[in-house]
Structures are given as structure tokens and as C-alpha cells.
Amino acid sequence: MRWGGSKRGRILRKNDVKGVGEGTAAGSEMRPTTNLGEAGASEHAGGGDWVDAITSGGNHRSEAGGREESGSRETLKDKVEDFFDCQFDLFIEFTGLISWTSGASIGWHSDDNRPYLKQRDFTAVCYLNSYGGDFKGGLFHFKDGEPTTIKPLAGDVAIFTADSSNIHSVDEIADGERLTLTLWFSRDASHDEDARLVSLLSQSLTF
Image (cartoon, rainbow, N blue to C red; front, side, top):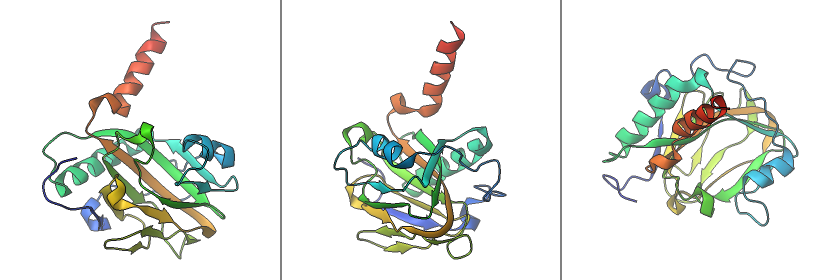
């Protein structure tokens, strides 16, 4: 993977990413509603003895993004391209509105740690609510590098490369609900989720 500079990632504060997640809180239209549960989380992550295992107890939910956050998605993509000085176009590979409630956690992993995830080049995690006020636990940790620990605050965004230089984890949620808008980006146009969706819709309309 090549991009300008040698940056691995950073935190963008709310004022740096205006318009992302504004007006969003638990109970809003952007709140995820799909329940993954333990079996669903295992299947989603590849099953078996997987390093990025989610311990959910049925309390980890995710949903593919909809039109409500389309402007936020483009803003985040622009910020990632600018920060990493990308000399190529990025494509949004997957968008997820993710809810974690009591008992949910995720162990050490990189975001490209499965053969079917190797197309992922960058990650952006936008926090939609705040540690302490909305939930307890749920701190984000990088295995090495700075910052080591991220305390989620509504409107802040963590952006980082999706490879093994950014191994990370999330502590178990002790109380409340932790909400994020998470995007993965790829240089491979064949993994553009918008193009795939248009293709699927076109196919469905032909029958």
C-alpha cells in the first residue's frame, strides 16, 4: 500500500469534521436496529478461531448505512484522502451503523485480517455518543503507537490504516449503549458498495 507520508492514523476532533453525525443520538433515525447476536457476529467475522472475535451476548448490532448518512460518508472519505495524502481515489467498501450494549467487546485485530477483507485500506470510526455520559466501558485501544487509548466523544473520528500496523481492540461495554458510524475504504473500485448496490437494484428491476 502506498500513500504520501508515513502516517498510520489519528483522531480528528469534532470541529475538523463538521456535519458528520450532527443531530444523531440514541433513538434517532440513524440508530441501528439489526441484532447480530453471537452466531451472527461469528459468521460475519469468518467463524472459527478468529482474532477479532466479538463477545456480544446478543448485544452487538449493526446495519448497513442508508441515505441519512450519505453526506457524512463523503465528508469522511474526503478527510481520509486528505490526511493520508492519497494519490488515488478511494471507494467506500462498507458502511455500518454499529451499536454496542452491555457485554459487547472486540479483541485485538486489524480490519483486513481475513482473506475476504484484504481489499480494506483505511478505516474511519465516527463516534455518535460519548464515553461516560452515554455509556461506560468501550474504550478503543491501539496495540502500539500514539494515541494508545481513545476515549470516544460524540463527533470525534478515528482514522487509520486497516492493515497490521494498526492492531486495535474495544473494551467491554459495562453500561449504556455505544454508537458509531464506521466506514472502510478501498482503492479497488470493484469493492465500491454504492456501485454494488446500484447493480443489485438494477438486476432486481429487470425481473
